[in-house]
Length: 146
Image 1 (cartoon, one colour):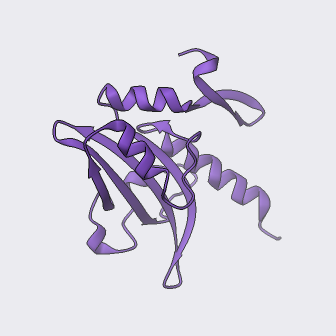
Image 2 (image 1 turned 90 degrees about the vertical axis):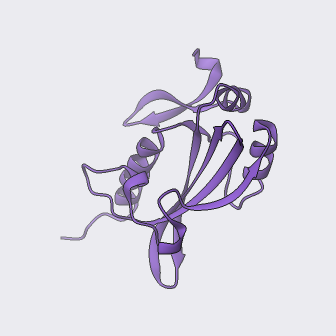
C-alpha cells in the first residue's frame, strides 16, 4: 500500500499510515476482509462506554455490526473487541445493523450511522490502535491533578 492509499495519522509526532481511502476500504471488503471504525465515547443509562462499527463480508452477504462496549481498557490493554457489551443482549459482535448483498451497499448503509466518517475506516484489528490514541488524547486533555 502506498502513502496515497490511506490517510496519515500522527502518533507521538511520527506520521503513520492507518486510514483506508474509500476505494481501498471497498477493495478490502471485495477481498473478503473486515473493516472497522472507532466512533468514540457513548453514554448509555449513565454508563460510559465506547462505540465502534465493523463491516464483515462472508459467503451470504456483508454484515454491519455496531458495538457499544464498556471502556475496560488499560495502559497496556486496548483490544476493544474483548470489552464487555454495555447491553448484554448485544452479544459478542455487538448489534447487527444490517446484512446486505454487496460491499457498496454495506458502506453506504454503515456511513448513514451517526458519527461514521467514510474516510476513517481501518483494517481489522487496527481499531485497537485507534482506541489507544483516543486514550492518550483523553489523558492529555484531562491530566490527573496532583
